[in-house]
Amino acid sequence: MRSSGPIPGNPWPHDMGITVEDRPHALLELLWIREAHDMHLQGTDLPPLLVDAPARASGSGPSAAERVEWERAWPRLWHAAAEHAGRDQDPRQFEHLQQTAHGSPEHERILHEIVGPSWRDEFDDAVLDDDGYQDWSRRSMDVHLSSMRERMTHSPEHRDLDALIRAWRAGLTKVVTIPCEGEYSRKLTNNALLMTDATRDDNDSYRRALDAFR
Image 1 (tube, rainbow, N blue to C red):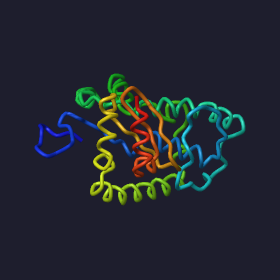
Image 2 (cartoon, rainbow, N blue to C red; image 1 turned 180 degrees about the vertical axis):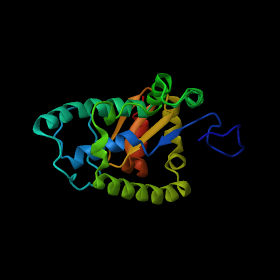
Image 3 (cartoon, rainbow, N blue to C red; image 1 turned 135 degrees about the vertical axis):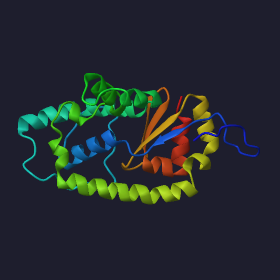
Image 4 (cartoon, rainbow, N blue to C red; image 1 turned 60 degrees about the vertical axis):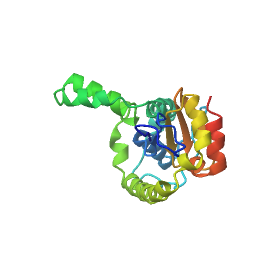
């Protein structure tokens, strides 16, 4: 969201750029894994439960020892993936990726920098082959596409522009949202906020989240 130059009568500052990441893939995978495998986690600032609670994963699931390892690793992977989701993407990385040979160490390094930390870094991604994950992911995408049409007409950023401008002046350039319950927001980095879709969609809660960004 940015205009190339001042537009008379437009209250949006022409040099203000805000990115909204509302489909953070690595975070969605981690949220599904947490609930589909009924993890009991310890940690601070962990996100609320998903609005659309997934069915239990099919199959035998992890062994007792594997479950302990999963539950120990999940909060750390969550914070790493969330921090990466909050970074502003450098478009030059995609150019560098195209200039490297597919399968080369350099190509894989740049690709990992773009994608960021994920469950796959430490565990077999076969857990995501579950039919339940595919069904939940499709439902989530359908809800996302439906809400996009409403947000294009009534953008939360334009609705709460004065609060957004204050946050932008404090350094905000990116908002990352997750489909979890209730009002929840956390500062990810010096430039990014993580929040639930419900927080961004509600006038009062979005303003509280933006005004808390310092």
